[in-house]
Image (cartoon, rainbow, N blue to C red; front, side, top):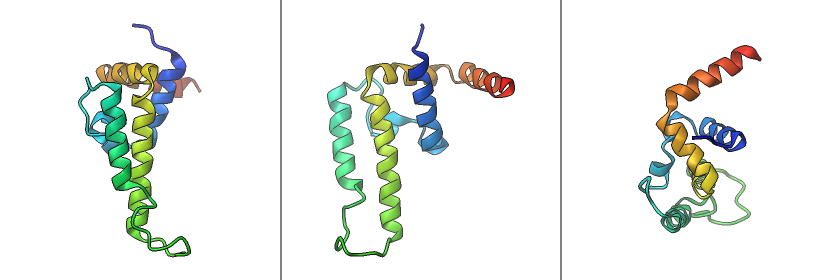
Length: 116
């Protein structure tokens, strides 16, 4: 199956950004791989309400950044990346392809790095 190279590159960049422990984007959003787009959107919205960086701050004037603020910002970034990939049909197809063919893409990436 042919995939748009820009979609594959976008998804690979997203996976590098979220790190190894968060590479299962469906798990990040707590949805099944066959979930409808509406289910993915609802899960994202619910999780962002829980993990939004502004949630739980005492005031806008508070200059101190707590570890909890940093954790929330990090979690929100991961949620945004996961949703950004899974909400776009072409990016989602590319992601599903990458998940189904990890060895093939890893080999391609190594060849590209060696030829650079």
